[in-house]
Image 1 (cartoon, rainbow, N blue to C red):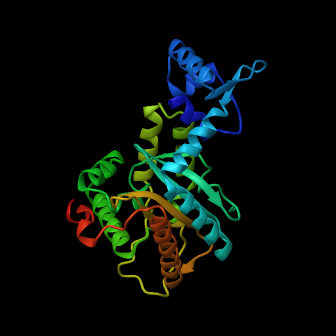
Image 2 (image 1 turned 120 degrees about the horizontal axis):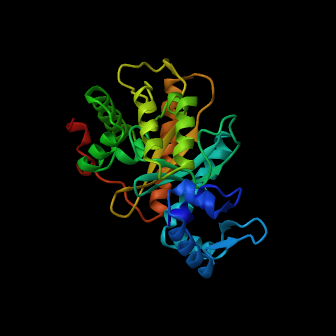
Length: 295
């Protein structure tokens, strides 16, 4: 699956077996055996001239089956399209994928920077990345999220506050710092070499040195201006877990807090529609994570 995930995240080109071995930390024998099976099933296709591998058409059937089993994905993408047209803004849909967050779809005008990512991009689920997924998670999951980032006590308390505010308001607001050049560069290394523990270690170091990556509303007035990366709202599954996130990319200029609140409420409405159409349910307040009471 590592090969399929890597090719999914790099759809614009093919990779030789040597490149796959280098990027994924596999040995050549395992790579040969795995690629032979994937090729036999049609999940990858080999270019006989350049000797590179790309995703095969058989995976399209897998994608269609996954969409049939997860109607919330279709509903979330539809709502992302509605929001993109209504707001004339870039929107995106992301999902949890094990220990990662994966970018599924982008709609609307493309921003000047590519920090929102491309479909197939994976980001490690570590604080503050994926806060909208963690805001309704159980305490152990939140603890692992914070510990993976190596956050110290002060930063951990800040993350708990941000998760509590996200639950209370129904949306998260990552700030521009989360897509700073240093973070983007470190993230690119993780995506290019997902098996490289050093690349993830470098990313955690950059995140630890970056301040104010999630907006905290407490103490701010309606006229206070902020420059935010995105506003993100959760789409819940049938048992009240966060399955997906719909996001709207912010402008490059500062925006009054009251406008951020308005955008967040509108986004939460679309996320609620996607939850309902995906046969999910919003958890009751007493089902919310105890993360704000820990740490």
